[in-house]
Length: 265
Ligand SMILES: CC(C)(COP(=O)(O)OP(=O)(O)OC[C@H]1O[C@@H](n2cnc3c(N)ncnc32)[C@H](O)[C@@H]1OP(=O)(O)O)[C@@H](O)C(=O)NCCC(=O)NCCSC(=O)C[C@H](O)C(=O)O
Ligand SMILES: [Mg+2]
Image (cartoon, rainbow, N blue to C red; front, side, top):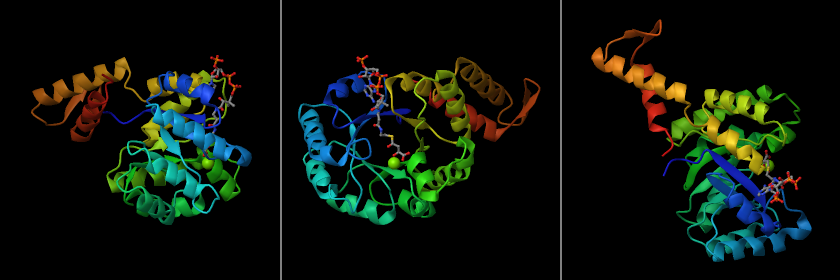
């Protein structure tokens, strides 16, 4: 199966929204036990998520972080659902190792959202179980004492893309956009993040899923371009050629092949 383009969060204490999330068109949903759930609702949220999973409901589970009072109980619950992947918040190598030790072989989505997490992202990306990296832009900004425009976080994004590439992981998942009613802004943002090397985005509302899926799928124009590049390079037997007034050679052929490989079924 292709790597998800969209991951929609749904708070664990809102079981009335689990089925809506699953039907939203998101490639994956994340049942959240962490920051969307207040301290008084943690046990109730975990019970709702367990019940959903026991009934065959889909989704990853974002557990609470290592060192919180809920970490052990979250892991004990997840141990009962062997097919369920986990998102690890505040992902640093020690936290990832602790989760992998309790859930051996389980795919982990590592949320890089602290200064220490970013500084050790290359090690974290190679940790046992880690299947993909994601960026937690809100916690990262808070941890760094920053309040930048979105572009101000691009150096951190570059490091996450690089760590993913070095570890042989899929293109990482960009963080959330808190504006809930700005489809045009989201569309432009996704285009920009794809250009930075991301392959997916975290979503917080069903309305964000469509623009995110579209933005991380090749457009008709890109598919047309890629097919013409393949044809031109085949005709030139792999040598450099001119297409649309531009030089095309092997790296662009590889880009064309990536586009064609990512056409949704
Ligand atoms: C942000 C929200 C609290 C907004 O909720 P609300 O104002 O109630 O939404 P709407 O009235 O617009 O809802 C319209 C319909 O859509 C359904 N809905 C809304 N959100 C979801 C959802 N997330 N999943 C499924 N369904 C959803 C409503 O039920 C309505 O349906 P209907 O009545 O049939 O029309 C809310 O969207 C929300 O809680 N979002 C998720 C918040 C969350 O999980 N936050 C944590 C993740 S972000 C994060 O942690 C950042 C990261 O860690 C970092 O550090 O960067
Ligand atoms: Mg966070």
